[in-house]
Image (cartoon, rainbow over the protein chains, first blue to last red):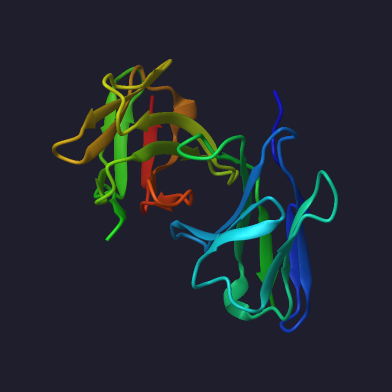
Length: 114
Length: 114
């Protein structure tokens, strides 16, 4: 069964450094998402992406964040200058169609900012 | 405001018994989707079941069923014949009609004991 994959599984970085989190969505999916979950809290939406552009973003997704689909398979989240409060689990998700179709999540990348 | 409320921070159930996890939602959109995800201690988000707002029948997927009461705006998850492997965090989520982002509740931690 096809699945969303994410690398790395765990990333440790120093405050102020740039990080890139990578995702490979399910191959025939068209809609892509990033969510984050701070330890012990609920999952929060960051951004949705379709047709090579951002379709929606949350208040969390400020100028420090960017997303890109550099080729036909990868979908990346970049944090330009990490802060301590960026420490969280970051989930990538993908969906085949618009509307209320199911979003399938990757296993997550745990980002630790020191 | 679009919101998901899960009022049970933790639930216990004995193996082989059924358990109901509560979820209420708030949206003014007539079209929406309701989802349940399972998050084991390993951290990944596993899709369990989906209910569309216009679906006439309650969704079922194996041992999972969704008790959808539209007038009460509730979408409770029923797990029948609980297994030890069902011990996990369970999140209820919604996609309101005007957006495709998932809005999550705070989750319920289910513990199944022998």
